[in-house]
Length: 132
Image 1 (cartoon, one colour):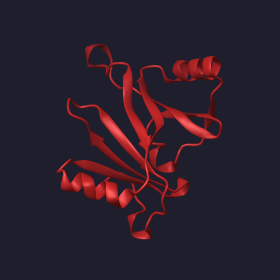
Image 2 (cartoon, helix red, strand yellow):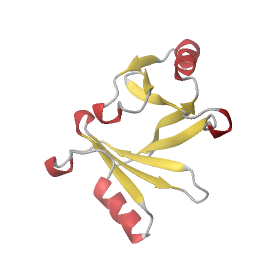
Image 3 (cartoon, one colour):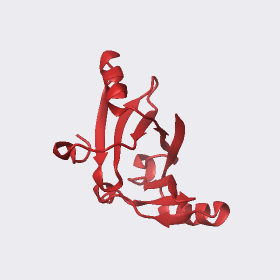
Image 4 (cartoon, one colour):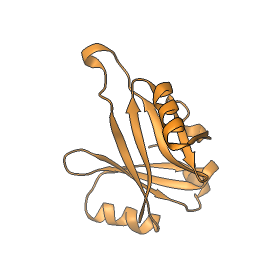
């Protein structure tokens, strides 16, 4: 297992993008079409998208806090990991991103932090869709 990416939720996606580009020499790269409905950017280092930036919504007291939204871990063995979550009765949602050849599982740790398990595996044709 290795850290795949971190997603940062922010009220100023342009300033946050510029900060990471300037400070860490990251560059804007492609995002899968299935997630382009979410305002934000994927920032790349050495050809990999390691910082994902997404917008917070609302204003005043309703505004979502600036935060690390979730952490992604790159794993192997999608079917076995999914079976393990089922066996442990841990709820999850799925996302298959055919255009980049990745399958993803989203789950919450105790206390609520969102975790994403990312797998580079072929996607069966019948499962080529967004989060269920």
